[in-house]
Image (cartoon, rainbow, N blue to C red; front, side, top):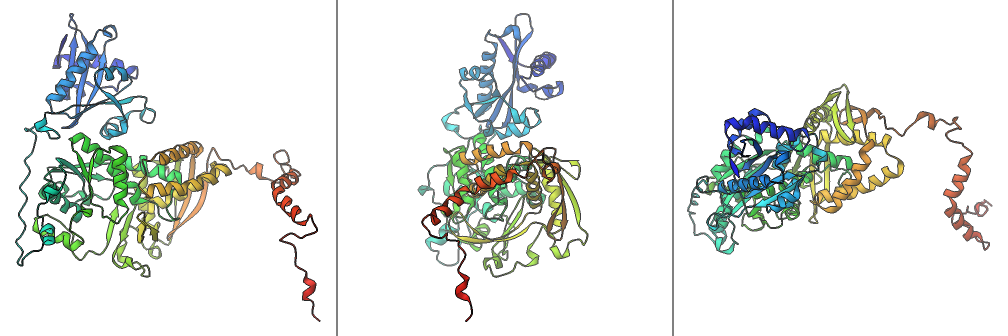
Length: 616
C-alpha cells in the first residue's frame, strides 16, 4: 500500500477528508494552517489513482506521550486495510521517536484493539482533555473511549528519553566539610549517599513548589536514589509571584526538567464547584481549600509520570500531616504501580533549620529564612496559616498575619451588592457578566476580600488523629457557598434538601481524608449532580464588614409560590385537611401515651399535683 509522510501538495486532500468526517461528528475539524504547521506529523495513504484514501497524525504532548488523531478513511476504501496499515505506520513512527505511551480517543474501539491498544480512562490523559477536548461542544457528553498502547523501549533506555534528547544531570555539589568530627546523623543530614539501602528508581516526578522543602528534596532524591528528578508544579491560583524563576530554581537544584501546568480552569470546574454543590464543609467551618487541591495535583503528577516514563512519584509532605494521605491515596487510585517516595518519612531532616543547613551545603537556591514563623498554603480558593503563635489556641491571630482580606472593622462603611447567576448549580456570572469558572472565583475573591469576608479561626481534628489550629481566608468560596445555599432553599424539596445536608457531612470527610477518587465520593457526586438540575437562577448578597446578608433570590424552577402559601386559597390547601394530617403524623405518640394510661397509670408527661404545694 502506498503509505508515506504527507507533503505540502497533500494538504487539500487531507483537509477535505478530515473535515468530511468532522461534519459527521466523527473528528474535530482542522484548518489548512494547522495541518501545514504539523505536516511532519501526518501520514497519508494513496490508491492507484493517486487519491488520498486515508490519513492520520501523531500528536506529541511530551517526549514520552503521543496521540493518534485525525485518523480518517474514505468511505469507498473502508474494509480494504488502509486504516489498520496506517495505524501500524503511526506506531512505527512513535517508536522511532521514543514515545512510551500512545493513546487515542475513538468510537472504533475494536479497530484499535486489533492493533494492540487496550481500553483506558480518558481522565488519565488530562493533557488531551484540557488542551484539545476543552473546546469541543461534547466535552461533558463525550461518547468516545480512550485506548492506550504502551510501547516498550530497548532495555538500555527503558524509562528514559532517547540519548539525543537526554540532558546530562549536573554533578551534585559536595557538602561543606564540618569543622568537628561528624556523627552518622550529621553525615546523612549533609547528604551522605545511602543508595544501597534504597530500592532502584530510575526517574521520579516530584510535586514541586519551589519552596524550601521541595527544593531540598531534589538533590536528596538524586543522592539517595541515584535517579533523574522531574519537577512538576501546578498553577492552581497561588499567585504569579510563585512562578518567577521557578524553572531556573528547579534546574539549579538538580532537576532534569521542570514542568508547570496551568490548572486553574480544571480546579474550579471539576473540583471546587462540585464540592460547593455538595455543600461540603468540614467540622462546620472549613471549606476544604487545601484538601481539595491535593488530588488534582497528584492526578497530574501521575499523568506526567506516565508521559515521561517515570517509575516513581514523590511529595514533600511531613509524616504527621493530612497531605501525605491525600497525595498517596490519589497515587494508589490512579496508578498503584508507581513507587511513592516521601522524604520526610525517611531522612534525618527534622526542622526548618535542618533543611536550611542541607540547602546551604548543596548550594540550593531558597528564599526561606529561619525567621519564618507561619506555614502557609495558597490557591485560588483560600490561603491557610499554621504555626507560630497560632500553635497556642489561646492566642488571637495577629493582624499582620492576614494577607488576603481586609480587617472587617476597616472594610468600607458602605455595603456592596453582588449578584451571582447559577445554571444547574454552577455559577456562571457575577453582576450580570458571564465568566469562566476560574474567573468567577477570582472575581468573588476580590469583592469578598475588600469587605473582610471569609476569615475562619479553627481548631480541627486532623485525619492522623491529633488536633491542629489553622486560620483560613476564603473570601470568594464563602460567598459562593452562601449564594448556592440560598438558591437551593428555593429549588429543592424538603426531603431532598434535608438528606443532602446529611450527605454533605460525609462528603466533606471524604474530601478532607483525601478520598476524592473513592467510589463513595463519586457516587455521592452523582446524587448531587442529579439534585442540581433545577438549581438555576440568581442570588443577591449584601457584603458588609465581614457579613453576608441575603438581599434577594430568584429561580424559574422555584418551588415557593406565594399563591400556594396564602391561607385563603382553599383550592390549593384546605385547612380542614390539617386535622387528619395531625392525627396520622402524631399517631405513634398518641399510641404510646394510651399504653401508659391504659391500666389507670399516668403518662410520663402528666401534670404534677400542685395541691401539695398549697400553703398552710
